[in-house]
Image 1 (cartoon, rainbow over the protein chains, first blue to last red):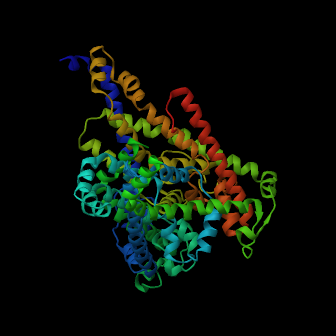
Image 2: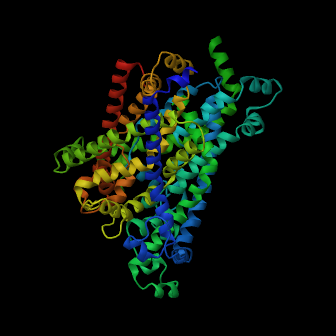
Image 3: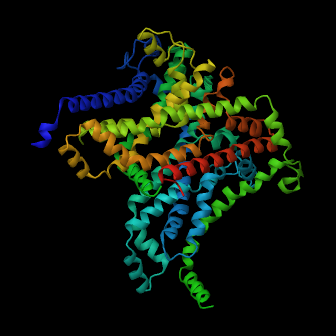
Length: 303
Length: 304
């Protein structure tokens, strides 16, 4: 009764403007995404002239045909999958045991280790000394250069540690020790099976990082055959290297002839690769959103 | 003596935990503390064949050369102005959006707005740069079309130096505002509902409750985020800048980190660019410590 009475005119107005604001945010964020999706299956003439502005026009799948018939993109995709899988496994193998050890209050020296790790968040050697180190380790032009220098992140260790501290009851560990269970057994048989959510969060955070990374490949790889997808995308989208090789036009004579306008082919391929490269993540993300959000929230508890 | 014994015992009891720690420890020592050892080449004339320790000391020569170079003030200005521009626009928006989310009933509408606004966070920086370049293309770009449709004259966004910073900041707003709300929403979930009930009884309007109950509750989170942002002020989105940089917008887009990349890795001036990078890191640390101290004095919220 009280609340109903107090829903004054001002409150209603405020609530309505909040909804309008959120709708505006929705449109501003959503429109470019829909535009890309529509542009990737519309005829390039309609896209470039502005005739296509929301829904696809003169639907064509030629763009995707070109993308899928392009060996460079396939090769990049394959490399990215390998780097992401190997990199994420390494990340988990380094992060989880360390985070667990650091979560144990009976672990002598954990303050020291924590300090050592946290310090690197605020001060680093910088680009050139890191590059020289990787070079001296003989990692140039190898997968090691892409995954070893990012084998763990401070932030993720802190998030995982907070998870272990707040969800694993101390009694469990004490009981296991009384039963003569070693720390290794305890970790593998009891802790890990209880930690599915944090393993998922870590795998997702690290995995997305590897999938989207381009800068390490730019400085450490010099063999194009080893380029991950993001480097191929950089050539197509940013450097606009629209050579026949990059766009795949030479591979498919039929399609290329049908659209002998090179610029049109180029724009079609662009929207196509954006969709193809981003879709795996954006498509699974709504289902995993809960985990991502959880990860950020766990981290914010003790940031 | 007795204390020592029990310490040794305590360590021995959990010897496996040190094994658990080992990979991470090795990683941080090699890949983070290793490069810190390499910083000494900023004070040397590094010659690859002589190695880091074998190269000759030159003191602060590289720093002097950097401070006296004609591009020093330009780099510093670009770095600071882009950072503060980004902070001024990009920092308050997630807070406002989170407060708005918090006002709306839980339901499909709220959930879909959240899902959509979080999504751009997962777009890679290369695709983001590609989208910016495509959308701002003077001949066929989507954004250029929208501006023409609204009856304005579109600018040469990608090649006019005057527009570079705006393009950088607003594309960042598009990409990260939604995701940035999560941490504030977590803080907002801690608001005591009794405060709202009491305020409603007292006749406080919705907007007043947002400003006097919700906002003060998340002030500690806001302070911490501000400190972290200030500490990272010179470490701005270097990867995106590098991708959007071209010879025409260079005078507005060249920042310290892109300069370090070009001088160090493209032109192989190892010592000089390490000195420039070290200058950057030191300024960062000083800013972080200063802001943290100010925050501690004025609000009792601080990182340490």
